[in-house]
Image (cartoon, rainbow, N blue to C red):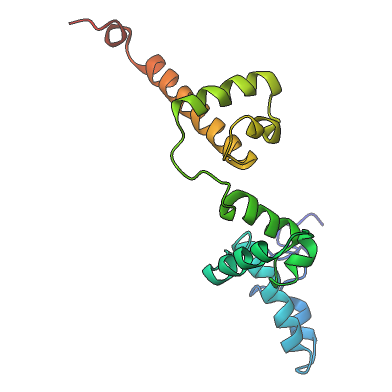
Length: 171
């Protein structure tokens, strides 16, 4: 009855798979249906491998050209020029990477101080904080904040892990 070698149990490959890992649906369909099913499986497996396709140089140049020629912005309409990209992806690419308003130089000590001060006031409201730091996007402020706090945490942990004599500077 409760024999562990019961053949009715599911295979280790999981439900819907043969023992060789081939989906049962592929084994049961006729040859005319297979190419279409392979396309579906390929597209779903691609989404597992990489979270999203990278922007190509040509796409960046095209977006810059389009932004120079447009007065009224509709990101969804603009996205139609970039197959596979949503309006949100196009907007974020422009705002966070390509806009001439973005300051790509290293952060200054003054900007860091402003960031930390504004974070105390507004918490994680990154767009609000970014308004106080010209040339920095909300994503840039968020990333810089976490970079600063990780650095601070590491230095605190380093000090806690050292022997007490080393912290006092004994000889």
